[in-house]
Length: 298
Image (cartoon, rainbow, N blue to C red; front, top):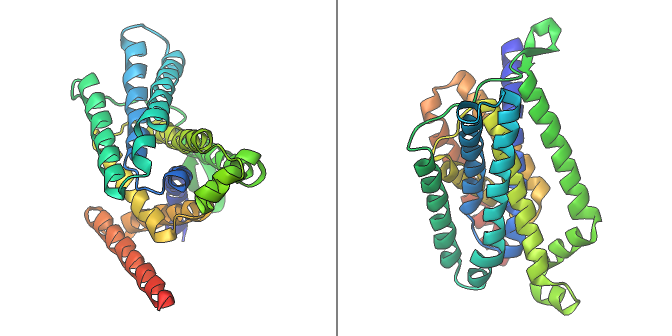
C-alpha cells in the first residue's frame, strides 16, 4: 500500500505541472480558437534558458549558487515574456482569422525556432542544474511516504497559481471579457470588448503558465531536452482536446489525471511503452467525443 501511495504522490507533482500547463493552453485557445504548438515550446525555452544562464552566472560570473539561480530565473523569464509579447502582438494576430492550418504551421515554426535557438545557445550541450531542496519530507510517516522539499514547494506554488487564475477568470472584468470572446467574439466586440487588448492579456497570461511550469519543472528535474517543447506541446494539445477546450479548470483536472496515470504506469509497467499507451488512450477519447457530437447532431 505504501508503494502505491508513494507513486500517487509522485504523480501528483507531475500532474500538477501538466495541470498548470494545460490551464494556460486553454486560456490562449479561448481567444485564438487554434491549435498552438508554441505553448509547449515556451515551457521548454524557459527551462533551457534558466539552466544556461544559471550556469553562466555560476561558472563565468562566479556568483554563489542562489544568486546564480535567481539571475538565471530573471533572464529566462525576461526572454520568455518577450517571446510571448511578440507572439501576442505580431505573430498570432495576422493568422488567427485565417485557416486553422495556418496557425498550426506558424506555431510549429515558432516551436522549432525556439528549440534551435536554445540548442545553438547551449552549443548542443546538455547542461544540468545543481540539485537543491532535495531533502525528503515525511508526508505519511507510518508508511514512510515522502516527497522532496522541491516537490512540496512546487505543489504549493502550482495550487496557489491555479487558485489565483480561477479567481482572475471567474471574478475579474478581464476574465469575463476573455470568456465573452471565447463564447461569441462578434457579440463581445459589439458590446465594447477590445479584442486586441483582451487577446494579448489572455495569450500573455496563458503563456505565463507555461513559463512558471517550465521553471518549476526545471527546478525539479534539473534538465529539459531540446525536443521537450514539441513533446510537451503535443501532449497538452491531446489532453486539452480530449477534455474539451471550453473550461480551463476541466483541462487542468484532466492533465492532473494524466500525470497520475503516467506515474502509475511507470510504477507497474515498462516505461518505454508509457507514451504510446497514453496517446492511444487520448486518441480513443477524442474518437468517442467525435462520435458523441455526431450522434447529437443527428
